[in-house]
Length: 639
Image (cartoon, rainbow, N blue to C red):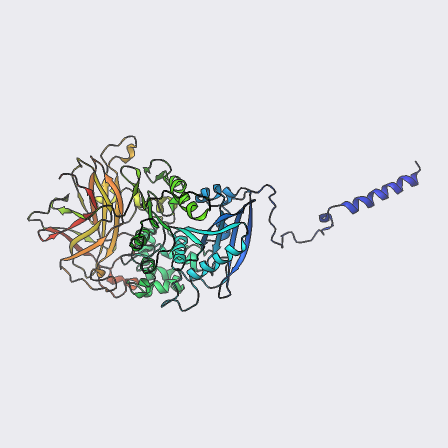
């Protein structure tokens, strides 16, 4: 072949190669390399399709919504969660072509049963338009706008049933904590396509016993939550205190308002709202969801779920269940589930909590055997009727699930009395020279709620703290400890214990913390580390200024004996033979709750340094002043 022919062939080859080269070969060297078109890697083997849409609300605001649809789904039910915690991340636990892997751990059964999963940012958060109002009140006295969480849920469900062609037009709602709150809000005016609801660890009454307060005492760790939720449309930055021990950090801050001012938190509107309403006034009463739902018809089968040791929202589920129970004519629409879990623990591994071990993965058992059949019954067209008990309660002590017809199980309360010699017994106190026990409560040295150093942001501390060993506090001089002899027979309680204290203080205000505790035998097998363990069964705080009414703060007359009666969290527990019943009483629980200055001031948030004073607290156990814990006893052991 001639040299000229060889050249022509080479030129032709180069031309053909250029014509068939991939497009990226033409990209200039200095073309910016960050994708500007919302690049997302393709997943040819994915078993789902993910859609991100903006759903319009009735006021023109659109809400960011992530819809995850099983591949080849047809006639599938939909499960909706409305969240302030970033819908995009809620639907992206992992990067995976498998739907079971990208969705939250607690969604395992929804995936296995072919559900379409929907997550939506509430208005004003993350990808949604509009203004964010913390726990936005319903339209009414506190909300003059035309929208709330009920209307947003309605408009969302209306859009879903008309636009998700793979669905059967039936929707369920599920969510925990704030997401449980949005489920309950949707139930105040439910869309007809909303067929079943499971609010978990829901925020129901922020003053009575859920997130913000307990009986008037403010939870100081809320400040970091306020900053995280309201300082930015996304997630706000963490507070940089520069102090490892939260006990020391909050103590140096002085009052709650003093601490907030250090970090500029007093500028946040929600901080200002809370500081302006220290008492249970109309601001809190108008938002109490148990009251709201109790005044409306029960239209949607509802399963209220809560953990036995829920460290954030231990009050609300029982309150909603009680409010709706009279409307459940056939005892088949209003359900209560209580497992041996921490806050939102129902969605994770439920085989243990702190030092406690249970009979298998209790959370997985519930999700698979109770919750999923409940949802299937109402959301699938071909599912059988579920055998859902009115109450499904895990009894601690015996470690077994119970299927009950009602809650509480105990027909009445039976007092166990505080007696001289720091004893407890079911017989009344007898006349004695020692008619009271006393301790000095010093606001400068408050009783910690867990051993120091206190790290409330540490999940290993915060999540299981309600089951932490109480021995660290039982021998403090500012804690009174009463205990029975070892029990000879089981003692079963099923309901809410009630503290009934006859007490006085040398100050003009006081907090009362009461703990009901199961003391384990000195030796335990096979868990030897539980020998002598002091397990909290039910405990809470009460701010003394509210003894005459939760909306009526009144100074306490120094030295005057008064009765303080308040409910503790519900329990379903058996004190086993050989165990002992213990009661601890103290006047601070820090820094979980703000300190009471023990001098009456109009607003404790703004107490001054010289308002914080030592006080002598007396607990009486004399005839006519028999302090006791009223127990919801099912069967009483002999004395």
